[in-house]
Length: 324
Image (cartoon, rainbow, N blue to C red; front, side, top):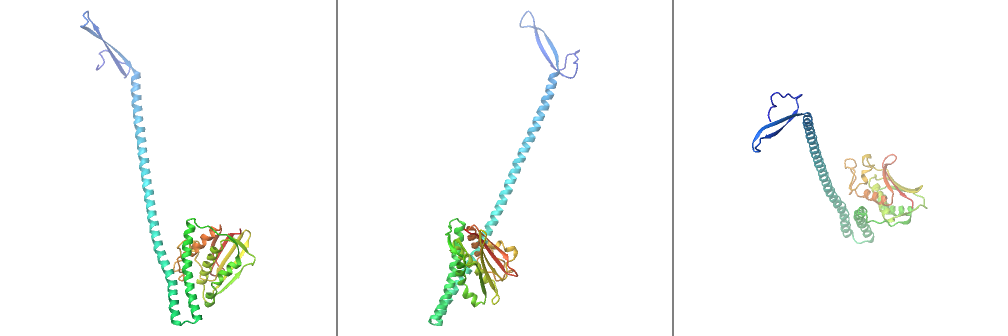
């Protein structure tokens, strides 16, 4: 080992292997000499270079794979963290929105229940003060009954919306007369219309009939007519209720010449607890539940309801229900 023996010249710069063999003397324990055989191995040089290249390549590829794997893990972790942060922010926003809705709903329900209760209490007090004549008693009893009916309607709307959303409401369809249904609902508004000098017209063929849940559709008409009465001017306010069959649909519309609904809210008013802001319609009051109730009931009949601008001014609510 070491440098090659003097006088040996390799044909090129290659690895060489040296083999040593001992020469024994007559006494086997004595060594007479050593024969050294030197042989160049070009293949060993190539193999060494190839091994180095292969090792370097494997190390490079392994490092790159490890880096890419770590990068993918980091990116996935960053994406997961970002998504979780976004979900948490959305959940927080929804929680705040729900809390605001709950507070607004509580205030609106208290407001809407307080007015009828105040009307009932005032009617009872006036009955005591005004004497016991039948005419006066009937008048104040009627006021108290109307206030009680408003409270009952609000509670019924809340319960019905809850049942529809939970899938517990089953329609009780029956063959009903559409003009009679409209007339029955209008009769409840006649005294208010007369006292406020507002007019109401009905345009409906007498033979029009449909299979509907009469009680729910009646409450839908109550909401639409009540809104129209509320938002038209005394003395010049006019409401028109039309109904007809168009091919396979029953179409009912309630049209008024009131203050109208801004275009930005024509879809939103059918959502729960949505109301037109006071600065755009300062006479609008309520829980924002009536039109949501109407939409749910109409959609439960496989129909749809929409709000449009009435000719000139005002609003037209149109109900389309399959004529089964």
